[in-house]
Image (cartoon, rainbow, N blue to C red; front, side):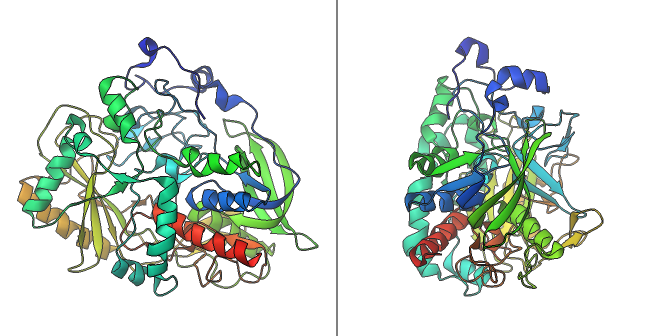
Length: 527
């Protein structure tokens, strides 16, 4: 969805000087305040969420001739090469945050206070962990850093334990997902540009440490990055913007592929600003969905009960799991089994920084160029990453680490508060931290840098995850294709299916490919 152009002379600054309040957001982005599409009272198929798994399922159902309603709690954001649509990390405001008054990014730098708004990033806080997840049409594709890779076979098999055949995924479903998402490696001219000096330095240090950095596929439109560098587009991806979205379409998010393709069939409608609060069953085999329509400031304007014949849960690991756990605890879905809410993990995520590297004085590019893989101890991968919240090269080198860590947690329902708790231990996983610290120290020594960038960040920080996985694990809560056991017509098609890890790799491509696999089987079998 492309917004109206604003004259370049007004809009070519790289970021707003100060966070915007709601009146300013209304003036800047009036599209966000227009009425959203209304869902019908009854739908043959209803999809909750619009992220990778949900969008893939919606497209294939719509192509098969089924009328599909997609419910998304977040807003539908416009896109334009020059308008200041999303916020930047250092000047985050309500556009970036889902119902939060303040935000602390990975550097430990607080931002706020900000206005309560339906922004794109929800940092859900549990007792010992912060979970980063999306709230926008396009789901996680709006806020991720674009890495779209399949795990190595040995790591995939270790994570999935025979639940899914890797060879089938590699020959059929990963290629099908790639054909729509269109990821590709960073071109040499982008890699050699000033904004990616940190990437080149990172690779050099990795090689000196005895590792073999390999280019990774990313969901980026490299021509848009070239436009940024030549002045034909507002700078975004080349100046460290990713966490809160890329206004100019530099990132190939789902609003540029799966979602418009589903809408183009004429069989799918995406109803943003509709938050699902509960699900259950109706007499006659239908499903009941309690939904409230929100204004951009999070106020509930209307509450409705919708029904559907088939209900597809694609609200992400947190959203889907919480709906199922609540439905089980309240008796709304009485046949759910004992595995609901279990097997949840962080994909072994941790953020790492090093300091006293070369200082270039220019901006950091956000797309990841490469990664290294190590299996000498705990299987892990480490990716070259920018440092969110640091807009210029200050000698910081960022990495995102992922391990295959067996630590798992459970979700529990609190009837008194109607809230959820997560049994993640204080201090997270010592094994993950130590395994990644060993790689970090090795690269620091080889590159003559210093681990951490204190007081801004720790050397290895596992107190957050951007890759929540599990809670409705394939083969436990569902059958081998996402059909929820005991409830015909109810399906899980997102990261909740994944048993806590996608094999030391970013999960977006695996979630998409798994949804492609599962929905194809469901359609072929007639349910």
